[in-house]
Image 1: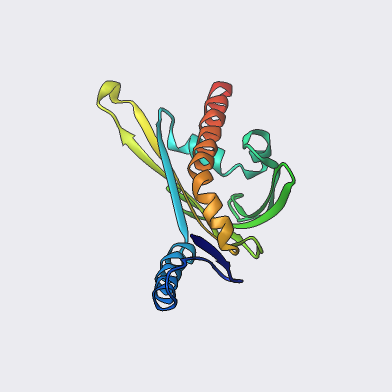
Image 2: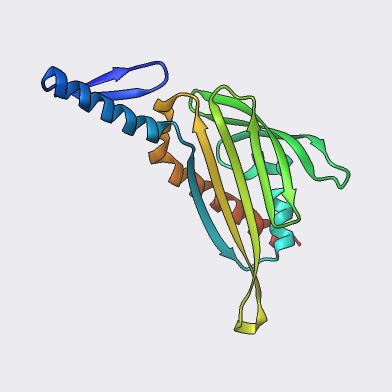
Amino acid sequence: MFTWVLHPNHLLFQKKISLTKSFNLFIRNQDFLNSILNKSKRFSTYRILPYKKSLIFSVISDIDSYSAFLPYCLASKVTKRDKNGLPQTADLRIGWKSYDEIFSSKISYISHDYIIANASNHQLFQKLQATWSLKDIQTTEKLEKKTKISLILDFRFSNPLYTIISMAAMPRISSLIITAFENRIKQIEKIN
């Protein structure tokens, strides 16, 4: 028989055996679960797309348009731009069923190769970071240029129970996000 033991900062379980063995099992399970729950989680996905890196960069950095194509994004607004017009801070309103939250993020760039968005001051997450990586790929067929686009999501929930729940959903969510961007890039490419 397993007993769930809830503590403010972590979730534990223990198997009832004898008092001494139970205590040892409790300590081992506590260490194991704490090591899982108290670390940031990372999910990543990538695609190789037949588009120029500059087009992909412009779609990812067009944060004001996210609510038009990104699933569960109800509103998106750049709140500050740098001297080149690139977003420095932005707010995203994310909603699903009864969940509705606004995330403020600071955005940084490493040339046009990396876009890093860090959500700040949010009670739901201790850490929430999205990193986009763009890499030119030269193919031998017709000397076509392609771009490898990677999305890495690093996060750590304030409530460890959310971490457990998210581990099943995050691969699907990261895939939904990159697919939405891929479709948006195709749409913008057709317009141009």
